[in-house]
Length: 77
Image 1 (spheres, rainbow, N blue to C red):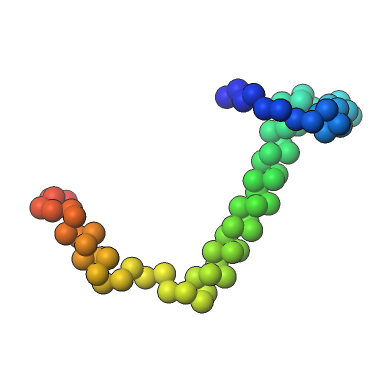
Image 2 (image 1 turned 45 degrees about the horizontal axis):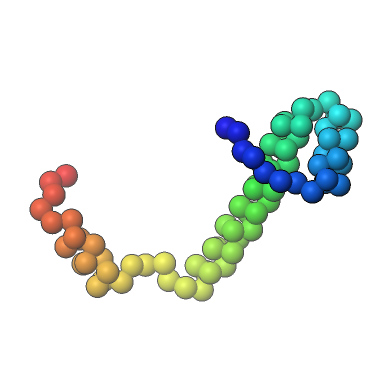
């Protein structure tokens, strides 16, 4: 996939310099950097959700459950 993005010159120049030093293409470097950022923040999201659900029930209320079942109608599974 191709994405057009704007990156400030100092960051772009630093990225090009580091990518050359470690023998990566700029695309590989940006892909690795973004993947690392995503992994770091996914863990934060999971930890946040774990903290929330440690205190709050994650069950669906009986009323909502009944509404969902009713909305299915007479579907045969």
